[in-house]
Length: 637
Image (cartoon, rainbow, N blue to C red; front, side):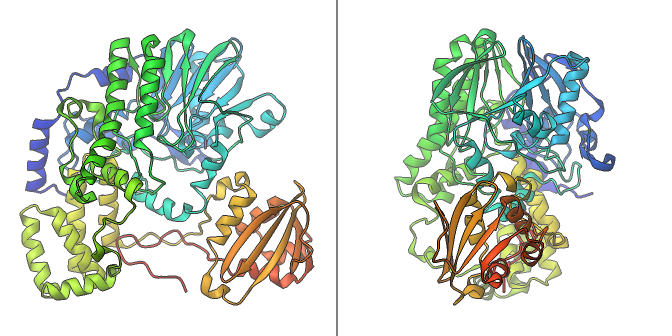
């Protein structure tokens, strides 16, 4: 088992003196309304494989933090272990701790409404089963409505564990989502999906073993389920800033909150029940303005304004405040204080970053000095268990001023490996660097050692000593980190310094959601896989007819760029015309069917050169999904 060294133990002792006072209110609220649960909240998949379980986190039963875990994060990790079915208020129940996110069940006059669907059908089905067991053992309440709060997969991926596409097609079930949901739900997982998936391993740490010296939490919840999500398209979308609807006797006022925590997101107010659900825009922590996995930078100013609207429009008439992660807050005054402080936190992050960048400070400089005001920093729900002040500040800067910090030396800096080689030369070579770095490590200067060892490993990737010291520095930074995502990133980096990246695996961006991807977005994703050097001087045009939807598209390959355009009819001037069902193209993209097999089986009908159809797919890069992160990546051939 890894050891926390003296400087890390000193860091923990100092942090304990600065942590908010423990009043046990969060633990009380996290257990309030408990109805029942199942052993370890386990969800099983095919062949009885465990998709989700709280069992590996039994070590968190100990109230005393392990020496290898930040004591503040230990507290959050223990709160996230509390699982089961909980009654929030009349008609409203939540299942928590069965996935990274929560699922909320609202009892209508005759049936059941689900707010969100968790991340996999297995965990969603397990959550529904817990509700049935304790509240509806005869399954008299048909689940007829699923409402997606926003466009992140941990909130919609389990929908097929609740309802089926056949139910929706037959009118037995409906799906409600915020405006723009379908595009954003799949877009984030398609074009940049391979890189994002690999980076998510570092953010969530779900490939790490569980234990006090490894994975303990993910801030918003324990971890990700070990299963893929699916999607059922909405039958209704909320389009106006505020809309009121009555569903099975339950009045719901929807508040759109686009470009906040997700590009498509909304809140839910239940006036008769005096309850408010804030989706993922209020949490018992500081959220990300740009997650470590990567995403478009979120608008912290808009985020704060949506919370302000909700505070003033709904707050005076709310007795129960909940969200799709963590536990609720009850009582008008506690709710008002919580909403106000969450609102102010995102406003401070925005305004103070902008103020300091207008004084000329660079992102790292702002991140080093930025602090929340005393009254916010002393609240548990503003702690950086998921986001952090440091990387949120850099996200605000990036949103306004891009990656460039305005220093011209950074306009055309050397890439990592040649920069590392020159740096080590200037520092006297690897042996001299290692001697100084070991001394700094002993002094607890882990941030600097991690920075120097990054260069050492880039320049000398086969140096076992450099890799081990790099890993040791990352490990101590992980043990100190209050942010679960930082801890996960540091500890996975330590493992990969020692063991290298994981084995190669076939990886298609958005594979499980591919059928929901629009034709235009799918063609854009294929264009982003086009290997430019291979495609040079291979110019042609192709007219597509999707026979199942009677849609026509034209793609043109020229100058190693592939452009696509929806057309009203076939393009007679195209070099080749193909006719196929969209599902056939999905199979080819997912590598379940080759272009040649599709033509031979008449699943694709070609007019013109069949070789061009096969050529197109031969020009696309395949991804293994295991590219190096702490080592230098190589350009594809």
